[in-house]
Image (cartoon, rainbow over all chains, first blue to last red; front, top):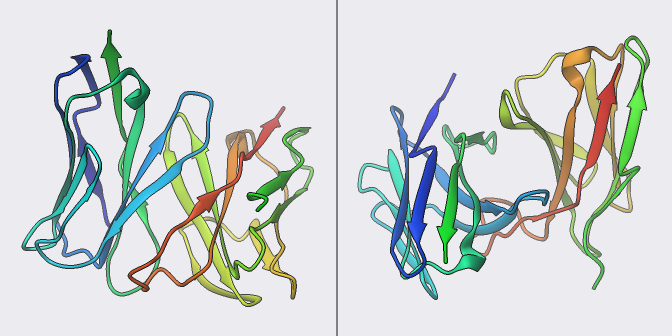
Length: 111
Length: 116
């Protein structure tokens, strides 16, 4: 079945540094979604990307969908302690909503 | 506006039993999806319902089933529980289908199921 590789698994940063997590697939994706989950909490939907080369911004967060629709990234500028959590991508292919989740990147921000 | 609610929040069952979990979506939301989250397998998609119809199903055995009612509330059932079914079961609702550019999905707090 479809697999989505997400890297890195963990990322420690000093507050104010930037952070990026990547999701890669060997197959062409229909869409990719990004979520954030705080420790002990439930996933929070951040965004969905559907178009080749799409770039979307939400304040300090920048989301990109690759031109070939096989990879995506989430970039956080100037991290804050409130950014702590695990960031997941979820991707579907073949025109159906059957998302495959990446294993997540846990972001630890040191004040 | 109230968020997605799930009941019960915690549940302990014995291997071989069955369990029913309930999800009430945000008012007006007609799409409900279910997910399983475990430390070993991560987040996995179970199924999606829209207007009482199951539209998509993940790769889970037939012991996992669900349904959606006319008021969009949804239930999922797991029969013949196994130890490996211990997980956080999450429900999420959305107003528009995932194909819509304005798609957003809201998760409930989850039901923590422990099978002993």
